[in-house]
Image (cartoon, rainbow, N blue to C red; front, side):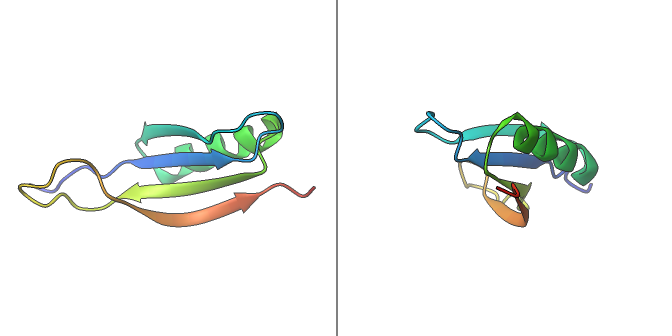
Length: 74
């Protein structure tokens, strides 16, 4: 059976906010892109869209790889 691989968004650079923001469990790349675009509109300067790597038996945690990066125009 094929594993379900989800997408996540990691946002950086909100003015006055010292820590990055992370959202996960988007079922498709389009859902993650929409969330990243909305984060850019809300004031975040950069968003990475990540995809879950295939799980390895015995590993704890979820490894992710960067699919694309969106940056604000300013």
